[in-house]
Length: 152
Length: 152
DNA sequence: ATAGATGCAAATGTTTTGCAGGAAA
DNA sequence: TTTCCTGCAAAACATTTGCATCTAT
Figure 1 (cartoon, rainbow over the protein chains, first blue to last red):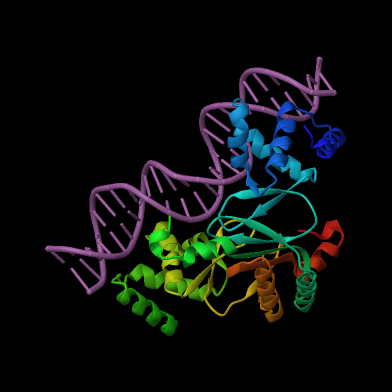
Figure 2 (tube, helix red, strand yellow; figure 1 turned 180 degrees about the vertical axis):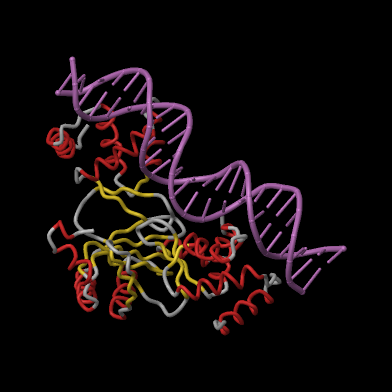
């Protein structure tokens, strides 16, 4: 069933914090890793309940927070409203298509450096940041260029 | 009572859209402009009700949306949760102090240009963006350096 | 045996909506 | 006198919390 490294990381985190290793936690970790994407707790809950209808949405919400604390997931807040989770990895920012919801990750060292300079100029010490570019992905630009009759 | 240019702009917008010029709308516009800051609808409601207790919070929420449509206010969503409104002016981004809530505006052409390049690389057409730097302002860095006994 | 987890229901905080009465054009 | 607004109460939404029960250790 794969996801072994992450399963081990979770097990380690739970032991170190005197927390319990439960079926639900393993289940949610697996489902989350399977999706590979920027998913909401509710999406994940809907998905899991298809095969495990006895699971509670509260548990999914709580477990996603736990996975963040364990360093396996990262919380993101895009404009659309609900909290999304991504698989934790190196720092990056996002491009978000406002039509189809596609999310693309990018990183740019130059912007990072420039941010530091700006912060220095205002006497701030940056702890984190949020940089999101909203617009149309290639595909959606194409769709919107067609005559209205062809639109969904 | 000042704010004449904005009052006129609002009046013009209301006429053009066949909307009505009411005491509440004028009141909310004035209060909003007085604050000069990044304020939530609820903050504004609390503030106005001190002198005008009969006003409804619904009206404040609705009017802030109206002021955005009229181009007089702009909506912002920072990490802390509720929607804040600022007086509409040239494009800019923000530094936010996570301890005291101070918000400083900045603009950086180089970052803007770099964003465009990134978008091009991924085939995106940017419609808007969001760039927020969270950290400690000068004052709060100082406070947090002191021994714990001196903290509030 | 016991600390901790689960899942339901209810509470939360913010914002929106339905609607009857009220004010502007 | 008609169209639009207001303000209340209630709904919406996403998320969190209280609590009795259940489970991993």
